[in-house]
Image (cartoon, rainbow, N blue to C red):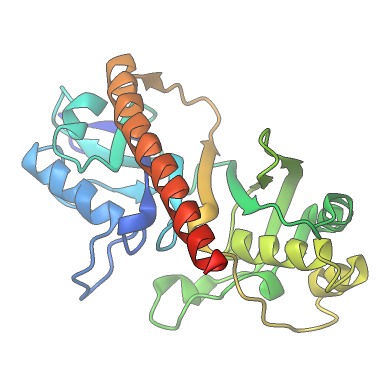
Length: 286
């Protein structure tokens, strides 16, 4: 880091529906969250580039996955960086809302002590929540999650030191207040590709009676090898990334603007849900 620069950590949120994922994809014309973020950084003269700024991100959410609190870190010589400034150059479905100035070696990925995801699973009549909770207990602790993840491809630099071992600290399963969804919260020291979505699929199979608790135990113990389709991406949110001794200051103005924009989205999608329900009902009656 040059003398005139300082280390900055930024909390981001986004709706991933229109994006190919978080990470910039080489030789791809599809937009990514990170691609839009870098465009904003360059327009505002915040960083000179990924390498020069020692840029890092806490996680790499897949295509269609959302975030309540993603974290990125970088060096900048711009002393006036604020979330609202960055939001002025971002699309409406990506936003910054908090900022910290950690120690000079802080790395948003390496220094994270835990990550939390939340999945919204539509509640079905045959889904036994008790069975799902009992099976989820087997996931707690450090395990080889090869059966419940997708390994990186050979073209990815992580493949050189890839390890399927992760430690899950907590799994909580509850029904949402309207009883329309099962809400699954998972906290771990880190997650593999599609790990949360494959865990959700496995728990859904147990809840529906297609599989049992012993099957989950066998998956985790690697006594069997099985391909499990991940649950749809649109139900997944990166909820929180935790650090030691890093104090984020939230931008209240930015949060109010974000809430107003998201409320418009909520009204739109709530209305569309009723429209679609009406159309489906009409065709069922025909």
